[in-house]
Amino acid sequence: MSALLTINISNDPLSGFKRKVDVEGFQFIEDGMREGKIFTKCRYFINNNNEYGDEITSLRYKSYDRNLEANNRRLINPENGLVVTLQDGEYKDPLGNVVTEPIGQFDHFRNLIKMGSINIIELLTNIVTAEDTFYGTYNE
Image (cartoon, rainbow, N blue to C red; front, side, top):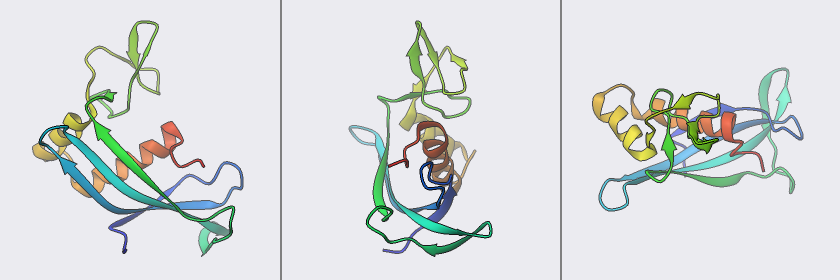
């Protein structure tokens, strides 16, 4: 399958190898559960003078699939789209911002698209980047 989008993410924390995430597809379902899924594949590359070199295909560093989900069970900060957690009786995002009115993650993303505030490529890029940066989603 050909990637719809390829995003450079952080280097692997253990090996230092560069990583890319291929967005291979996405699905947004508004009826019923109201959820979205993003189908991704993470790949490793040899660092070649700050450029991406050859893809690594060893047993330890092989590409792997990771599906991301957005739903309204996950609450987020509507100002920045980051998932909030309940800490000491307050909702806080990973940056420590207190959020008084969190919103469901799916509804937030749907509203951004409908209002024209962001296009689908920007949205997918932002979601993958946040998953890597704030939640370590791609750290195997």
